[in-house]
Image 1 (tube, rainbow, N blue to C red):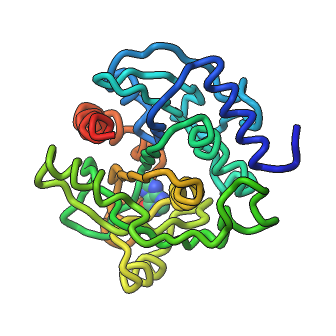
Image 2 (image 1 turned 120 degrees about the horizontal axis):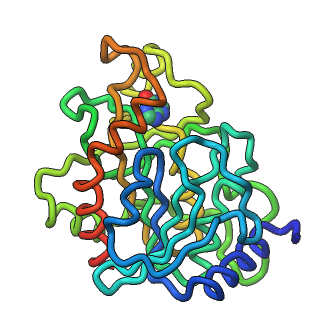
Length: 271
Ligand code: HPA
């Protein structure tokens, strides 16, 4: 296997095209979103992601680790049910590998979903929230390391309008009351303290989670249009009387699955 993450992603992208065909968009399903795959449209095929070059075996409960090819009202969408996280001590290149592979396989749109804590009390558990912008507080960035190789854009990508205004407008057209917010991406491994949530609120965060921000940067770097949505599974630490629990995160996803599928269909058909 090549040491160059771009060559590795290109090899995975070629394998995706070979085995699952061509796709216009890729959808990454986070914790609690996995059940959405069957509700999106017609599943045309699938394979375990770790059959493709460069993908590690998945470990987080609630992530199926499958790549599905789904026809969403005529738009072919590559659905990646599961992702690698920095808190699992995967290198940043592994965390963004699926997104890079999909974009190099021809996906022009990258749809990222996650489970998140809400810093806004009005957006309680079960609420889908569009991501309008992000704070990358992971301490990592996919654009560090050697300069991207010949044939790829340089590293200093412009991240203004990282989350596509066009796709956000499509989501709002389908769901006018949909909330929007800034997502703070943390390294994770634990949930936050109330003091950290206080800090994040002062920094302008509305949502907090442990994924998405690095994938969004990698997708933009390769020229893809980015869409992001969080499913609120809990109020952030210190905002609610109950302790945070990963089981609850997964259960909230199950209860909201129909609404989430409708939202993603509305965006996929705008691709
Ligand atoms: N914090 C960080 N990540 C999360 C949370 C949270 O409160 N809920 C779901 N993922």
